[in-house]
Amino acid sequence: MKPGACWLAAAALLLVASSADALAWRLFAGREECITEIMPDYQWEMVKNKEQTPEHTHVLVDLGFVITSRYGTEANKAAVDFNVYGPTGNSVHKEDAVSETEIAGKPHTMTAEGGQGPWRACFRVSKGQILRPSVIVKISYFTVNSMSLVGTSFEWQRNAAAGGESPPALDPKHLGTVEQVEEVTQGLQRLDYYLMNVTNEQRYLYARTVRHLRTAQSTHARALGYMLLICGTIVLASFVQVMGVRMMFKSNRRLII
Image (cartoon, rainbow, N blue to C red; front, top):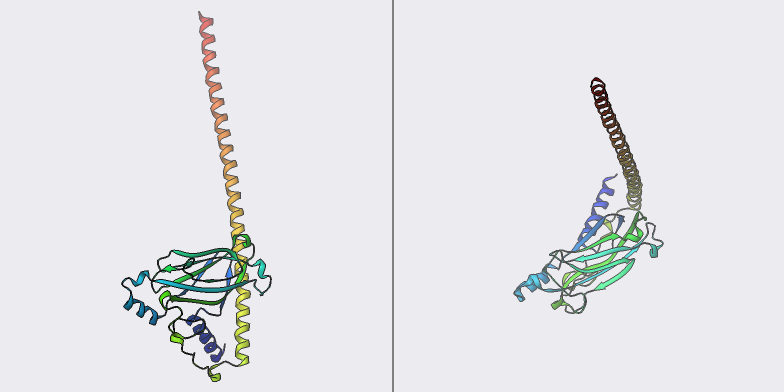
């Protein structure tokens, strides 16, 4: 890969890591994956100066996402179970088998106590969709605000910088060329192909291991039964021989008398 393409990929990862907004990834069945978000530092400093127990402050968690199939179709058949956890690991919101949802903290439903974070949103492919190998999780927004600052100029709005400042302008010179983007896209497609091959191979190996284990267990059960049958036959034959010898000695003794 060319140096420019590497730089472009690194810049894309930095942009994704800086915010949970407009984030999308592929979620495989049988795995739980989480994203994290924290209360902005300027809000946390204000909470610490204002409240005696900032770790128990009330926060508002705002989260929206859409679930689709691998190719962006059949959204009604792609569903996940998701949980929102506080900094102490306690669950503050949970929903099952959803494909598109939007939650916003409200005093009677979603107000949660916790500190700055991290707050986690965890996703898992629903049990009813376990045969679907993967789905696409698209995060529209994920913000954490102090309830005391909601509605003020200090609220962290969706797709907005801290304190209501406008984001810096993007210099076109820092963007990659069409060829670089195509090269990165092709690389991601190859990576997706390899991951699918590895997933299918692991499933095959798991099924073969289970089949071999069942064969070994069946063979062990048959061998154990055969051994018990042989031992029982030997014991029975020995008992018959002992009884026969005793009867022979008893018959000889009667004839002598």
